[in-house]
Amino acid sequence: MMRNPDGSLALDGDLDQPESGRETRWPLIVLVVGALLGCIFSAVSTSDFIQHLDRQVHSIHCSFIPGAGKELGESGCKAVMMSPYSSYFRESLWGGMPVSLWALATFAFLLYRGGLLLWRGKPTRPETLFLLAATALPVLMSLVYGYLSVAKVGETCKVCVGIYVSSAMVFMGAVVAHQKNSAPHDFTPLGGKFALWFVEGVLFVAFLSITYVIFTPSPDAKKALAGCGSLVSGDDPNEVMIPLPSGDGEPAIEVLDPLCPACKAFDERLGTSSLRKRLDLKAVLFPLDPACNWMVTEALHPGACAVSEAMLCAAGLSGTKDQKAAHEVLVWAFKNQEKLRDLAAKDDNAIRSKIESTFPKVKGCLGGTQVKSKLTKSLRWAVANAIPVLTPQLFVGNARMCDEDTDLGLEFTLSNMLSKQGKLARSQKKPGAAKP
Image (cartoon, rainbow, N blue to C red):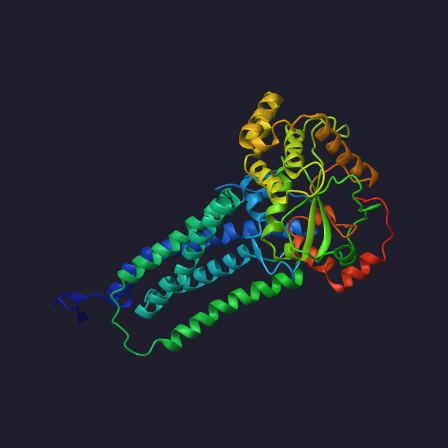
């Protein structure tokens, strides 16, 4: 037997489990549980992301319960996943490298480090200090992506919230574990130890990243270069096209409905991409509203005709287009889509009054014979080019980007279509109907 510092006898079990081990046990358990939850939430998010790379439509998990709440259709989780902030390197990699994959690698590393210290039961102060520093990373990224989700995307992803909570758990576990660690201070240089543990973490990230690149679905190389079908003619004899903020590069046409949620999301993705500056972009209005569109049998986006008229009025019905004024109407419509659709569903006159009070410039033009004729010509342009009845659509030159490439594959496909190989592939296509 040996004596403790206070003079009492120390049992053999006390020697095997020093005070520092007992004090850090529960904080490390909290850390391990948080890391495990983080792994599960990150894996669910990554799995949903990978499923959508096969160019098909899939349901998405969106619940605070890991693996539950699978939904087909619009949700906060889908909006976040389709946003430009969900992955990196989108121009060079199909869909990009999902942030959730790096989160999975980080939580897996923290689970390994925390589990190792918990199993050994004798963490040193440098070990808990490094663990504290390592857990600060997911907390920082949670703050960044929480801000982007609310401020930029305007939606909240329940799976992402699960990751944020997991980040808080591992951080708090590491903080308490280090505070309660009564192991002797190690005054030896820590650079070598920290570098070794840091390399271990990097290896976790590198292994999952390389595995992802090797095994994830790849795009259709031909479609990525030449698109799906082409316009019969990209000419605009009736001056129905409205210039959009862009660069002075390749001529491009965006077919949109100002009250279409998918159009809003597409325009935001295109807006955050550097590739927009390589386009000379113009809009063709195609409201999915039977109030003016005879190709639509039900009001998918009520009020879209009124807003489209407002854009044409703001731009000017003849002569030089007022790009800024038309874009102001579009931005306002995108921002208030749900309210405007609800208002129009109750009373079409109410939405027109709302538009005129917000943009006095269009008063006297909105609802007039001249603007209605202009909108009809815009729809007839779509008929003449055999454009499918859906929005959004993007034509680069006269080549139509495939529908399935307008979400996660936008940057990769657009980058390819604008490349030398893409321009050559597009030039070899014969003009014709824009096939879905």
